[in-house]
Length: 368
Image (cartoon, rainbow, N blue to C red):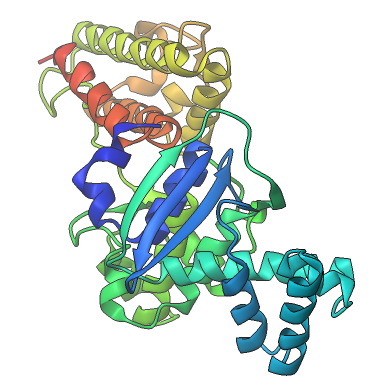
């Protein structure tokens, strides 16, 4: 678990974002919150929401059945009488009467767990604490409830513009489409898919709303949903390879390419240290995602085992960088690659690692 859960940002963040961070980091533990003066608990196992003996409250579940029409007051009175007479739990009494088939009862349990999470996500001011768990979970009633679908539903329910605004970045920050997941991995609505398509190239919230034919409110809601599930993210700080326009001689370009590859190798080493061999696949995927937007001289570059990008031919033999305009294009492409790689760190390890990495890249020095 990263330091974000002990920060002021955690204390102030919308609960929906807290759920998203737990899912993104694959954490196991319990989220305790006080919503409207009432204590609540949500349990997680490797990032998935679970309903276990720690988070399950029988009285709340019976209230859920009553308010949703799953059972009437007479039936629930019979349940309580049976539980008192036999000494079993109310949950078991529901099955023994039987008020529901066991399969239907467990479907209702899952629905209850989802509604508890959605109700908590809607509370912007709830006090909260998250405690990780390293050992086995308590008795589990329902496991592996999908968090991204909960996040999408939570945002779709938001009516308050102020609550929605808390999920969106500041006005001057750009939002870009992220390649971490396929949109098909989530049950996106048609509007959410449409808005996702607007983010290439990246846009601020205002720019996306101005361009969107879905209208401002629907566009902001879709942006909030896409940010939570990781299909979109704010643009990372851009670790510049070189200042522009500067010296664009071939000798200078050779030095700039050397610095660029030093930074690429540094990013690869950083990610490898944190997550191991899978780093090569993640970095390779990030480069491939932007490859089509790169200068032709870099489009065919091959990712090396140490993270460097090797051109098919040396710069002095590469006809694609003849002229200052082409060399400026190549510099911008280098920045595009580095930004994509830094985003891998942000998605995989979190914003604190991203900031630390950018500071380290800056210390590698700039080529004038």
